[in-house]
Image (cartoon, rainbow, N blue to C red):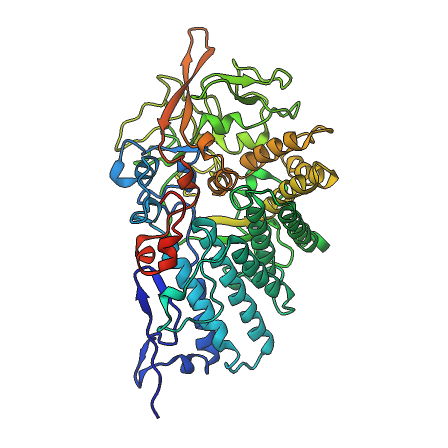
Length: 581
């Protein structure tokens, strides 16, 4: 009997999801897709293939393992301007993104860093799996049903990550015939994509054989029902945001608020999930997979096999590449702990050199690092910070001019900060060796859902008790005062956006937040730092300065261009290329 063999047809970047996929050669010849799904172990192996296109994220961008934060106003990469060939940041901030070239996808060190192709590949694999799973023999139907939920949710994940970056994409819920007519492929609306993603998330949530949380170490990389809640919360929030909701349709905000409310109800019920008690320690920990874990905050963690490179300060342990250093803009975002009030309200000038100091906050510009939000001390190494206490030896950071960790460096062998700050988040000060931040990447965590709820509810209804409870839950974990009562909707919006920034810096949230809020023309033009002079009496003088000007802040950078390969073969992509490209 003749067998049907399977091949992938790839036309440029767009993957056809067909029944012609080539699989491994066996001693008896080529294994067919029918063979795969007639064997329980091979079926499970194919599910692993569906997982294989989840990106590494973290420090996997570019050859210097740069974080995505390095092209936001939260950070400046220390190699930017020094080692052009080693860092994707330099071409990005120069505005080099085009339909034919994506600096972020170029020369990455991690898995699946060409997101456009990888996400389509993941969608194709998920569809092939789901199309054939029903025919696969399983002794345990519970496992089979769980696999179906995982593949369905993986499809939602890949679609969400794809449309978040590239805008609405054609929807396929089955493998696409290789002979499909490309001229018939059309772009749906963003709402259509969100509806499809939510449908898949809901299907995974409704599956009784899908666990809410992973409790077995051997399953640490597998999705859970909690991931479905997290994706649904994030996707509906973005759908309601200005980028995709230009008319400010309140029903979209209500849908987003409901999704996050339902997520929190399901996750914190019976104590299954909860905020980690210590913010700084949380980023030093890895998710534990037991029935009663210490870390109940992490929803999905990505473990990278790439150890990356060190994040440290030069006087502690010099490094040939330093990484992404916090900016003055990020430092300014942290409130004062005693009053709970913002220290800096904004800037009187376009260069951010003349800050608007909040007179009621208690901020002292002559002692700018005193009394700040504890999350500041868990995130930033600043002049005068005590780095460690090993056998009684305390290391003090010296970023002032002439200090051991000063701004001026010695590239390419020792790269110092360009901003006057070093990254503290995720770095254990008690370890003497240089450390990597990408071994454990917390892709989804509970704190984000609280903040998603606060934002959506504020836009849908105003600053009601739901909004206050959500934000204050986050602030209390950090030992910060509750927000003041009586805030207007506009005032609350500002506080929520500030809260997202200081709660989740370096977690890729800022990069997407400023896009969905459509404010990159305010945030992405430049970043600043702090030059510090040590006076003869031991005090310090502080001068702000522009460290880097950037050229990727125009509206076209809100959404990535569709790669030229697909734009050239799919007529609707040519007609409906993303704005500005």
